[in-house]
Amino acid sequence: MRPQSPAGQRISAGSLSSAKLTVGAPVLNSLTPAQVRTAAEQTASALPPGTGAQVDLVRRADVRDDLAAITAPTLVIVTTADSLIPVALQHDLAAAIPGAQTAELSTGRLPFLEQPNQWLEIITGFLGQEHDAR
Image (cartoon, rainbow, N blue to C red; front, side):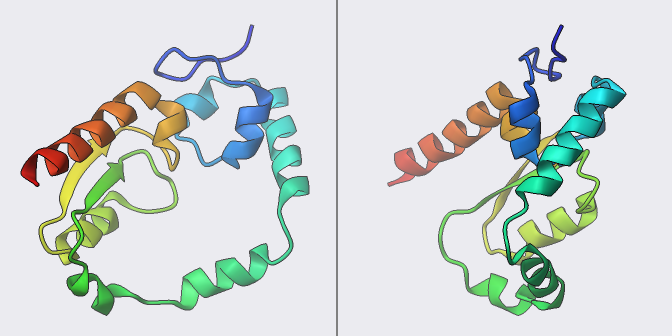
C-alpha cells in the first residue's frame, strides 16, 4: 500500500522524487525506509548541472532591502513544518513586503503536495479577494 499525505492523497515514488524530499515530517514519517532511500537516490541522480552554483548564489544573495519596493499584492504561505526555512524567517519575509498577507500550513516546503486541498483553498481565496478588490 502506498503512503498517504496528511491530506489523504496517495504519494507515489515519482512524486517523492520530484519533491526532492522537501516534504514535512508527517509525510516522511509515513514512508518506509526503502521508500525514503529510493526517493533520495532518484533525487540525487536527477539534480541538474548547476545546482551547486544555484545553492551558492542563494546563500550569498541578500534581497531584504528590495522587499519594501514590492507593490504587487503578495501572499506568503508560511510552511510551519519546513526544515530548511524557520517559521520566524518566513514571517520576517512577509513583514518586509508592504501589505503582504500570510497564511500558515503545517507542511514542509511543498504544501501543494502535502496538503493540496488546503493550499488550493488559500491560493484561490487570496486571488478571489484580489479580483474582488479591483
